[in-house]
Amino acid sequence: DAKTTQPPSMDCAEGRAANLPCNHSTISGNEYVYWYRQIHSQGPQYIIHGLKNNETNEMASLIITEDRKSSTLILPHATLRDTAVYYCIVKGEYGNKLVFGAGTILRVKS
Amino acid sequence: GAGVSQSPRYKVAKRGQDVALRCDPISGHVSLFWYQQALGQGPEFLTYFQNEAQLDKSGLPSDRFFAERPEGSVSTLKIQRTQQEDSAVYLCASSLTATSVVLAKNIQYFGAGTRLSVL
Image 1 (cartoon, one colour):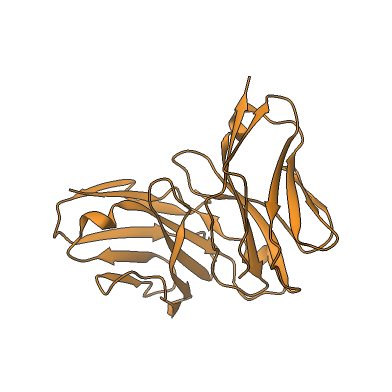
Image 2 (cartoon, chains in turn blue, orange; image 1 turned 60 degrees about the horizontal axis):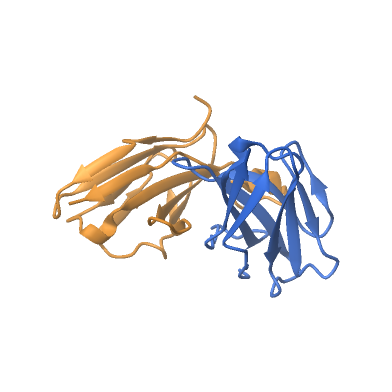
């Protein structure tokens, strides 16, 4: 599975959009981009995933560049409860394990 | 509840003790995963079950670690002769399957974990 690179930390003002970048320059054609987050003292929580088209659900939007070498997770109106570690993971269609990096610590501030 | 349940939430063990950590996956989920998360790091894969079959145990750090899922539902991770370096949060995840072309069925749902402290 391809490796990902994320900034170690980011700050965001409450109510503003949080844009979390991820580089995955070695991604292969059949690998998907997944995003999970982990709030303190909880297990990781699935957010969204995509292949090459932009995706949106009730939690977030995922923007994947045309060359698929990077992506951005967007939380449109961040709240204090969105403070967490966000993990960008690249996984094959049938890969049976998630390979987590260090993730990005997102701090939402009032 | 409808989520993945792990017990105990916290476990303190003396070095050399054996421990057993339990995971109750979401009902009907075929696939079950164990991960280990050291302080300040992302989770690391330990092992994977499809029903009762342990298909991948490549992440188990030593032969002191053993996992089972005898009836294809509840799973137990056992650590024998615990060492201080075993101190970590042990996370369990389940998914409906791991091999479906419908990727929503492959999404892993995590429990809150068991925090193991070995003194």
